[in-house]
Length: 390
Image 1 (cartoon, helix red, strand yellow):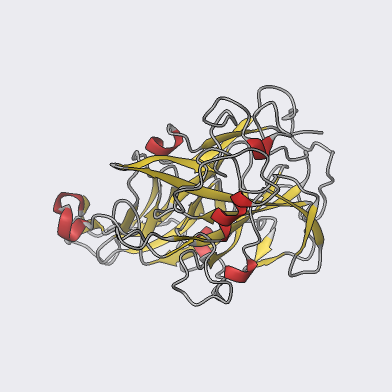
Image 2 (image 1 turned 120 degrees about the vertical axis):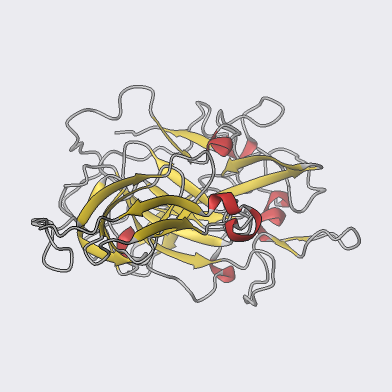
């Protein structure tokens, strides 16, 4: 009956775990590769594949008790099989039997002042960009699933295969500026805001190699026109009921614009132009004005999502507010993350694009990856290379 520290990793292929710990009090002290500024009391620990949580579980008031760790996360998340109904064998994760003897406990009490000696540098605070952060570029990137007669065929990052090639083996037409495959080419020392649009039906844990990031916020998109946005629908309108097929929304309609450089199949409004890249040219020279007034280059090749956003932008929970390398992107939402190509210990506002602060040169070598960490997805074909440039 004392406090214990646990390091938890979701190592499943695809399953998320939303775990409760019976009557034990739980405090999260770290997420992924970094400590939080102070312990965060949590009612559950929610992990997607590759996410890690560093927690303190307090059994001090449970002498002689049996504690069950239970899971209630549907698979796939959030609208798949429910453990309590469909998979009862996946409800109970672990059992703790707490001895009845009295023990002393000299470990740091998370209710007290168990803080980092030095707080983490902040890129985002309460859903807003820190005033010292200069955003150098915004990348608007989409997650898209393509269906076949028997179910999903593939899930793609920005509608692009790993090698950047379209189905006919040619470079995806809206990525013609990137003949070497990678389309994400951040500058060393720069800070980018990635807007990840999840147009699929499932949550995806998006993971970045080399860098950690901070979650800015998440906001709902009116994908199918049922949520009352002034713009109607970003992805499609309605569902295919066999009688009235869905109507292409703005994302699908964009493939029919004059900016598209090569014909592709538009017959299916839910699955237009698989693997042809984003619907618009990746870099048209556009800019975007951020809420803090910064005017920043915008790339990615996806239409403006602003008319289809709902007024529910939410800052990350306290246990997600530190440095992360894996983020759960929820269906029908845009997840915004601030990514900085510099060590996490670098003070906010001191990085300069083009100046390398790593103890090695990340612009050398084959490059890095960003991908979904559901194994079945990253293998088919939800992974893209990226390179860091000077």
